[in-house]
Image (cartoon, rainbow, N blue to C red; front, side, top):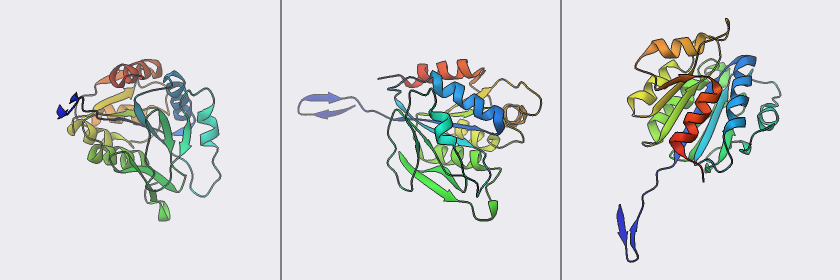
Length: 202
């Protein structure tokens, strides 16, 4: 705690919650989590969902339905604000360039097509300081596993959806099996409750 002429000032470290998913079930899971996060959440929420490049996307409109957090499309070097949810573009993937500074990574030739969650998670582990949470929801394949391991290694909190329906359990199962313990495994409702418990609400 540092001192000022008026007395001690509490140091504040902003929280970042990074969420990754894939497919229609992953989209549903993201929506369920967002609907349970209250306005005034003391965290920046960053969301990645696998989407085909070069196609129009209505992800912002879909996620905004029922969400108490404003859902915004990030721009390069955007200063991220608490109590807001940010997404990227289908061909420009969301990442963190520095603490609370957004980054959009162009995807020439679909180089990150199935690794956009890892891209976000590893950038958060690199830049977010001590208060960050990585969340893997439904999806196929194993995107997010390496990034979640990086978050764990950097001292962050890791959360994974309980594996469920066949065809959408690959990302959760692979994240659990990949490396290191997972702090929370549960439903979207439990994950949302844990996020609120850990970051607080203004």
